[in-house]
Length: 312
Image (cartoon, rainbow, N blue to C red; front, side):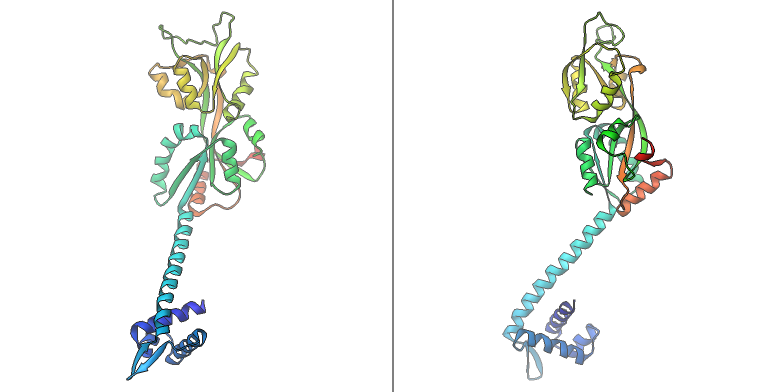
């Protein structure tokens, strides 16, 4: 730090060519400034200034040091500003990581409301599988994970988020509902209540998708004759398969609401076959950046927060 001060004194003296004006500008005594420059010359091993007819003139070594010092201090100042900008950005940024389905059915409605309330915040949203999202959360690469968790906490147990290291807020409710393309009469092509004994074509989530874990638990309790022909890792891919009349699929209601209203899809079974889910905002209990903490505190005013260990 002292060396940087001396270099700034030296550059100021290069500009003013006056010990008196430089000392006044740098808020140091003339004798103190003189000692600093003398120490710098001792370090350089040569004189940096000469007095010619009462004027202060840079030597060749002084000119070279002026160039080096200007470049060095400029680079250091840029570094300091960039660090300050990064710190400020970290304080203002709110980082979410969520399964792909949340980018389709949740964030388009939620994010505009957040922006109205947190005008200074910078939002970033990454999409991945839920296990990868939790890895990012545990490694400090994201502030929150937003995902669909089943009410029986099967997903939470399977992923190990059942300790007081995590806290959660339930933001909303959602349902996986059985849907099918309609026939010409507008009825379900694949009806869970009407069967001639032959298996119904079943469109399932791939096993790495966390929605499959909750769905399979429900199906294990039902006496349904389903035959899985196709699967997909994304709910939107299953939606397209369902629209293509390939079978029955359990899809988030928010994802197919418009399809149901337009009768592109119809329910394939009663709500007895629905799978209730919670839209959960999950965080570690370690400290959050400023704006992320402000978001959490704001949500706590209207929601109940629990550690996962308190509800499983």
